[in-house]
Length: 147
Image 1: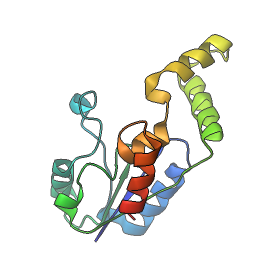
Image 2: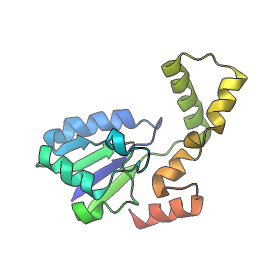
Image 3: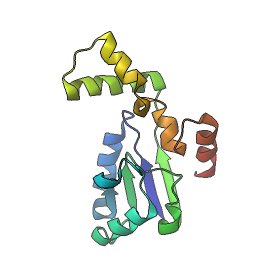
């Protein structure tokens, strides 16, 4: 069996990632989508697991901001156990916005907040991580299906 941590931004996932690395050592991989593919296919796919196994032959688990439960990772992993942490959406958004300001050195203004909030990539993040779209019902269904 393999575990897959769906690391949603600003939900405490960095701490969990550290615990997983310390616990599983070379059996754990912080997996990322190759940069040349991110724009067209932003999610981890079964082929990415196949590639990771070349470097991590004792792979027992993965985590990352692009690990999801709707891309068929079971095809490559067999039995897989997904888990994630959710956070109050308002608090997650505020934390994400503050992180954005720190990274960009932008001032905290109404315009900066409006630009951030209206960016489609910043909306419904937790829902999209669970089902690939801004569909709450589909996200809840995935939670029930991929326990």
